[in-house]
Length: 418
Image (cartoon, rainbow, N blue to C red; front, side, top):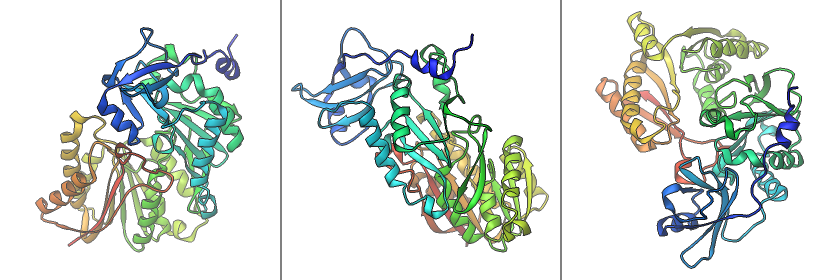
């Protein structure tokens, strides 16, 4: 007999009643006092002989054995503890979780009134719940976890979530690293519906009045990239009368905004045919808008580097080119390669950009600083003989707050060719 989700959740071992006591190095003490949400493995200098399990609560003390913080312990991760509360002790229970979720919801309270029913409800570390992301797709909530430490707390979090934002359904998404550790998942799986009813994986929502669909069960991240909402809106203001190319288009977010802003022709380029099929459907969902109805939308399923080369060779030129690649540097060893890729993408994008055209370049690699990214793009443009005149730099939308240095990952450059 197959065990249902309710039974699976009920059979997840709860966190230990006894809290783990940890002592940490002076540098870690300073970082925690300054608000950093992570305690790394190498920072721990004393802990109980029994290592504990993912999700156990760990209390961290300073050299004088005074309370510093309490957080979620994960012996399988280099981030050994993700901090929940610092400065003063707290009881971590449903009431505590509900308060954190309510505070996060309050920060986004204005969005639905702006025609936006799809947005990030909880931004992990930056909203006080490290390793946990919750995205809202109208009446559906997608909960994504990046540490096994959240597994024993799922039932409590779901109850707190139901208090704050009742939903038609709550879907679980797991990071790739977690999916490789099934022994700690207790039968839970990526794409599982934890609560409520989800009749279709394709969920519709609105963003600045535009209608989108997202596959919340199998789509990248949780199905859509809400962090680019404000940058997409800026593109709409630039697109009137401009032939537009959207590189790494995914499901056509930037493409649809360009069309809504008056672009007569939009090309969506991405390697994923299913993503481009979703982009076509997103255009169809908005054909009642005159500007979208008037726009010609073409999809091109191909590798971005190869396709940009071929477009240039065929003499294809665009007035507006948007390049929004996936994270190119997820670890320090990949940083130099990522900068080379940004340089090459800049060369290729400028190769299909009309004189005096507009280039939009984005980076979501947290390892790459904003200064390095902007300098790389601008230097590459000089090397290509087409120097840029930047007119805007932007970052995170209001639903993606930055609570610590590593939390700042999104950079977007808007520039015209001089």
